[in-house]
Image (cartoon, rainbow, N blue to C red; front, side, top):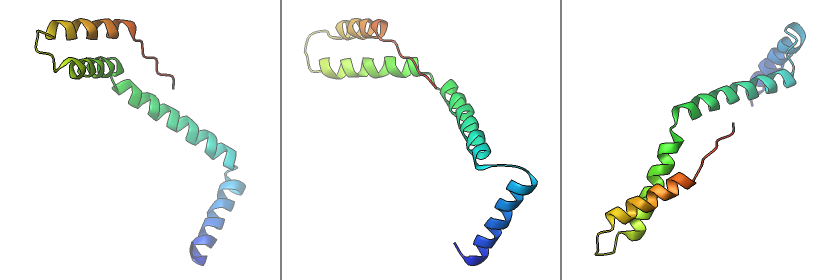
Length: 92
């Protein structure tokens, strides 16, 4: 940081602290609150249940894909059973 930038930073920091009464703890608190709100927004936009279901189904299909007999019914049955038994919980 250049000397001029350092001086400007000190002036700004002093203004924030002395004139506005904003402390480092205030800034940390506001930042954590803002990040939590944004994370919740992003998680609300994801359909995690569908993502897990499709991932499991693809994994089962890849594992059983080399067999010559009719595996589509078997793959679907296994995928449905796995999906029914799995539960995903996202905690913010």
